[in-house]
Length: 457
Image (cartoon, rainbow, N blue to C red; front, side, top):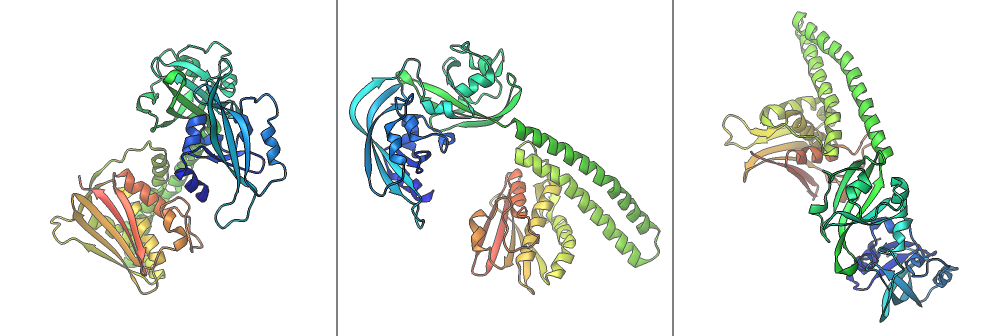
């Protein structure tokens, strides 16, 4: 919500964006700090739940029946994060995004009307809204790792009753006898959070945990952790791995037979044309085998559990294979490919890379350039060493469509290709960054240039 975000950033007062029924759709940083709100609260709680008297219907809710077109003010007592309640005035304004028709949205600005502070009910340490989340939420004392708070969803999931108070977090949450090895508490601060997928021994399920420091009663700090259940997603990921492993095995069996047939034809035929076709069969088998292996590598790169094994690669030879493989595609588009290497590279242009991954990266970029080029034009691949970097730039006539310029390297983003998958530039970025490199582009004035920069050592 672009215009609300702009208003929220420049306001020093707590702001909420509400729908016509009083549901909180968004809030600014000041509101997040005062009420200990997090992103998961958006869309899940109503503004009424912030009131002190949450056991009965709030009169404030009557304001959301039928809508309105002018400013309204309302007095209330709100519970804040630091174990206190305070009288406030709420100012409500009708709101619509730039260029949109009014749709009942409301901006609610909170203004403290006096300094009177009321003690919270006994035992309350966090806002009522945390109990409305369908995620485990707990608060830990970072100085001694003891539990300060657990929301109702976590109590039910963990089945720990009232025995959690004052106990160590690793015992209550994870059923361990010692500190968890994955704990990110040491790296967290009020501005820096941690995030990790964690298997919970106590529930036997996978969770995505995010943690950060927040203000707590008595002026001390505490660690807030929100754990979302991702067990079904993890099971699907494991199933996907099993299916892909079976597919790779089943594909390679007939592929090996085709490869052996090609070798036999190349070795036994007296016809030069037959031997040439046999060599193309062998080359295609190598390419298909590399693609089968690459699918698993890309999946592991997305998960962050793949380490690139670099070696010296002769870029001249690798690009030669890329261009040879794409000859047919270039001919069908009536486009030429031109390679330009820096002159002072005795012994050839050597890069430190994984041969298969770099081949795939450059093949994707040259393929995109061919498909985007007008007929009769040339795709140029330039290679140079500069400032301790190996730089490879792929250039072509034609501009990237304006609609996808800002998302050019995102997954599944494509435009104007009937058979496009939107994976070419995404995987190229993934592969370049896996080498510790970068990828960037320039487009305009009828021209596009995509540049891969890799560390030379």
